[in-house]
Length: 43
Image (cartoon, rainbow, N blue to C red; front, side, top):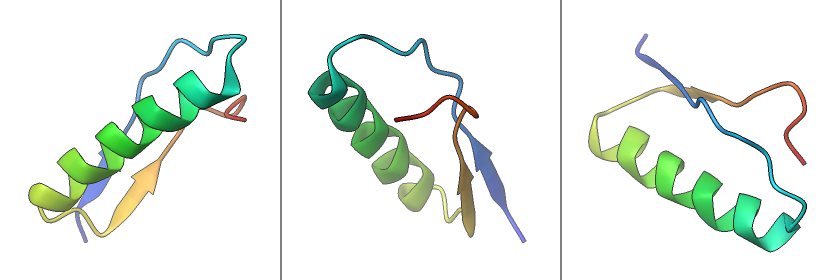
């Protein structure tokens, strides 16, 4: 199993966080990750 980890600084703007999250997911997918993990305060 390949795991991808996202290290993110959360912002007040939820849409900004969402867009950044999508970028991480796309990158993880291109690198054949099976699981994507985000920070515990992800919203």
